[in-house]
Image (cartoon, rainbow, N blue to C red; front, side):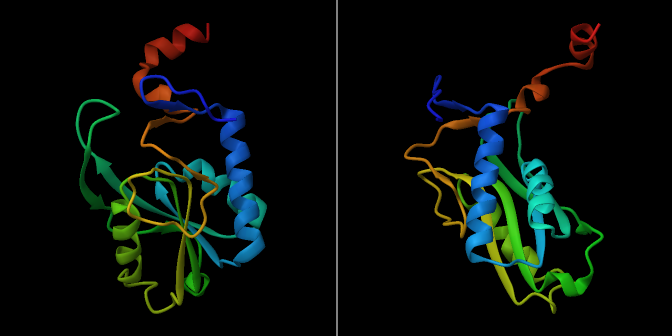
Length: 178
């Protein structure tokens, strides 16, 4: 299925993407019953949308800036967390948290996010368990997610279906849609 390597890039089509998210949903459904889904923005946004619809769970988002530099493929920078979780979930929903990201690259973002969540004042006393899920785990990642349908044997740059928008200007989009 996924074998489009171009200059150490793994190019994912939208159909491949949704298929992987569905496999992740099945993994979770078969062995875990979370009470809330917490996504790491931006990568987890489309995953959380699908998982919340399939698993019928409330969602929350943590906004983290983790990459610094001019290009999409720059090295990971210092992590900066937003002050608050964005969610309509109630505190009691945070009993069994499933923390979701698109990938485990180095493992730093997932490790630090678990730590941040467990110390987040409004919900920390309600959290009894945090498990993790992502679509891809890169070979060099030191973090082992609880749920992950694709474990890569290398460390390619993963080009996700919407990533090309980062390189497009609004003028280009207008021109394409005339």
